[in-house]
Length: 131
Image (cartoon, rainbow, N blue to C red; front, side, top):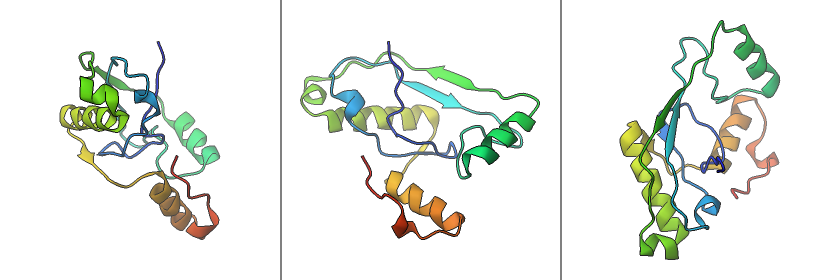
């Protein structure tokens, strides 16, 4: 078994970003899982800060909790086996529905630009490739 995060990054827990297709190239059934962090003060999801500050705030909380929601095993259709993008998008829609999440079309490049703006840096100076 292997655990993959097909978004390739984290969000604030309200949105689901586009999935990378690498995890779906195997055309194998998968176990969709939704992770939620029911935090009161600080989210362990590491949304918009540098690593040192994130670790510091994480360690300042008395306890950190995670909720794991396991959905039934998803078996790809023949169409999904032929096109990993269709497979990825269908699993993404299932997770959004089951997790009450909003589908976002923004990707990692836009997230990097957002973080750069938060930190007062030029987004153009960052590596923008969304692989």
